[in-house]
Length: 290
Image (cartoon, rainbow, N blue to C red; front, side):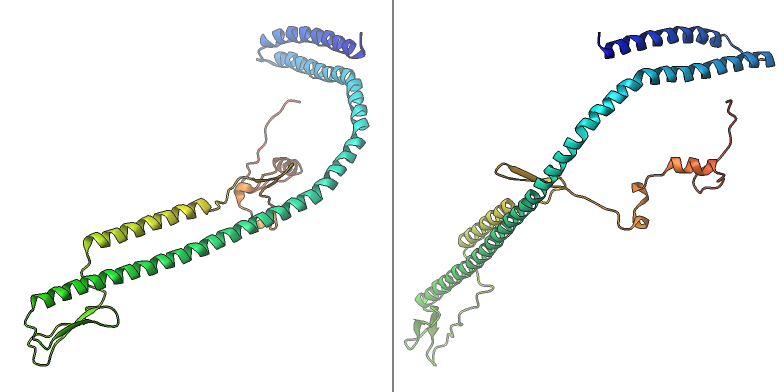
């Protein structure tokens, strides 16, 4: 039989014997009614018995547990120094690894920022090119509409004489040049703004532009880096590091009340020492039988 088993059996027998006596006393206390000084005297005797048994119970427990605690302490002491050495080695290795991982993460994030910058720059150039192309197509459309209308007017005659001519100017617009005696004066080409546009052509341009904008928005969303409140994990080969949000108190007076912990132990000590007025605290006396 090992020492631990013997201690356990001894403790069990002692506890069972004590429980039996406690239950007998509990039956007497259950029938107790304090209506007179005599009853109070009996109750006081029971109280003293209970207090004595509590002390005895604690003494028995301490006696049985002390050898085990001493054994545990010796074992803990045996492993304390190796563990401390191992923790020192862990920290000595972790520090340079953490610095290395931080540099690697910074390089990766810098590369990602550069990638996004170049992507944004390319997107801006693409949009500018698309806008230039849109304006070019619109100008072509406007010139075509004008030339079609001008040719139609010329073919219909509209009172033009033999001295009148129709030719293209430097911008490619058809222009009717009327002779001095011509009763009809052809208007110059209208400006681009406000000119009628072919509905099908305009609709096609608008649809293509809307599609291009939607695709650009999808690309931007795919490239966006969304900050997270959770700890970010970075893995490189067999190494894994993570970033955690940390805090330290730099000015306790500015810390909001919901983050402060009231020291009730300190308050009770102050009341026992004679403090009778503490804002936010109710202080009173109660009767207590010792």
